[in-house]
Structure formats: structure tokens, C-alpha cells
Image (cartoon, rainbow, N blue to C red; front, side):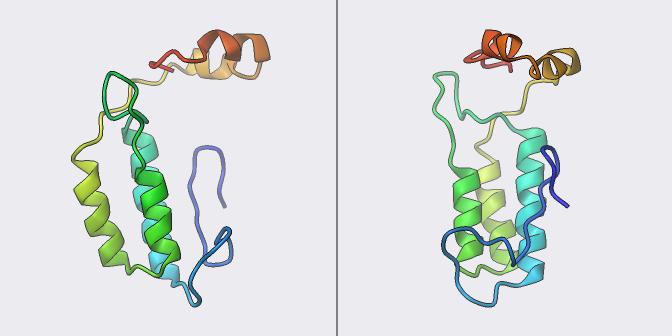
Length: 111
């Protein structure tokens, strides 16, 4: 089951548009690559806050019926351009439950 830190896509939760007969194998693969992205990469491609579109790309090719092999190939191609994520600060993350604390950290790239 999906959580805020665990990605789990199934053919039953396809979003607004998808081709018919999406495979479970492709759903597992897109979940795997998106989890890898979330765990390992920063949302920005560079230091001037150009954000990447890898999540949109992976979900789109999956919804259009890409095979697990195609999803992996395309992810590997895009993965090479990604910045590594900053180390997680669990104390700061826990503080996000408080709206004022959350707002203090808005637009700070390290968070």
C-alpha cells in the first residue's frame, strides 16, 4: 500500500487517462523507478531551480502502456541527469506537522 514515503502504483489507480490492460509488471516497475527517484534525487536539475519532469514522464509512459523494459530504459536515461538528494534532517521533517514551522522552511532548497 502507498504511503507518503512508499510509492505503489497499480493498474487500478491509473489517474485521468490510460490505455487499457495496463500490466502489473509495468506498474511494479514504474513504482520501483519512482521510489528510487524519490529516495535518491533532488527535485531540481540544477542550482537555479529548474525542476525536472521525470515523474511526469514515467507516469505518462506507464499510462500509455510501456513495458517494464521501456520504463527502466527511459528512467536510466533520465537518471543520469539528476542531482543527488540532500541528506534528510528528521528533526526538520518532523517539524513540518506545525504549519508555522513548515512555512519557515518553504523555498529552502535543502528541505
